Image 1: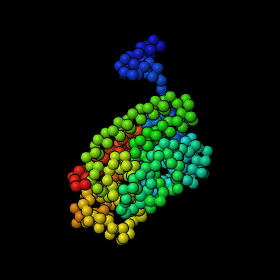
Image 2: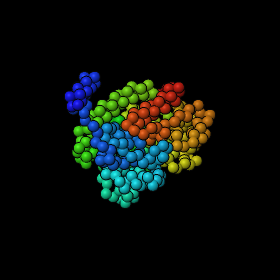
Image 3: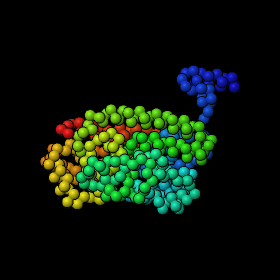
Image 4: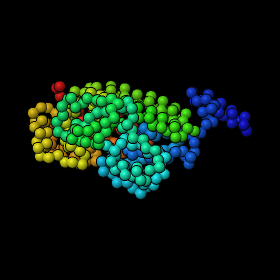
Amino acid sequence: MMSSLAGLCVGLSMALPGIGVEAAVSSPKPASTAPAVVVSIAPVHSLAAMVMEGVAMPHLLLSGGASPHGYALKPSDGRALARARLVIWIGPGLEQFLVKPLATLARRSQKLALIKTGGLIQRRARGGGLWETSDYGPRVGTQRHNGHDHDGHGDDFHVWLDPRNAIVMVGEIARVLSRIDSANGARYLANRRRAVSEITALDTALEARLDPIRRIPYFVYHDAYSYFEGRYGLKSLGAVVVGPDRRPGIKRLRAIRARLQGAPMACIFTEPQFPPALANSIVKGTGAGVGVLDPVGAGLVPGAGLYSVLLNALADGLIACLSSRRLSP
């Protein structure tokens, strides 16, 4: 019996290059003894799922089209937080709804606020209306976190939209998991190496895909894309709304219309959680198009593959609208 098993393992190692006998006979830690991990939003859940692949699937709080700007926990979320060994989130500037539950329901769990990770590229929020090009400046490794201020007086917390930040966060997730679950430490670190390789390849591919549209101007619905835009040198000139839950005033709408009428503008991008009527009314008669971008992955299937799908979908949305309306720089 043992000789048959050994023969099977040797056969597997020969059939699958890079997979040795030790890997063939190893198995992930049973899910019942793996650490219970809860993650706030789908992009971060995807990064955590990459690290935990073969061990367990983390619990995702916000799925579908839910927004972190005003989410209400379900009873199942409360139970998951109460059982959690580790809770991973960006931080109170983005998921304000989690602050009290983490202090009560998850008071015994370890909390990993990824915004505090050393080495992150961080950017200032630019707010609504027209932006100056100086608003793009990144700040590396800063520890200023004063809330999610869409008026431009705080930080932009959509840090996952720069793949270089995703690599840093994957490393931090793997480090923390390896410390609290040393039995699976080697697996977490191996998964980290694989995730870094995949994200690096994704970053390279996106840079090549987006290069032809880098100088084509556009507006976004709200200021959620500075990390993606800054990484690939895109030409976003402003946002329609100050925040996702605040409609623009007449003064801002007039300023945007004046900008559209005074110089060519390719597109205004809305988001799937919001009806396109506002964007359609702004572009009427200007020749600009309306596209759709999604910074959090509404409607995407959660899991390790979501991060790549999310960033490719952003590129798809930008290319689809901007490439059909090429304008002079």
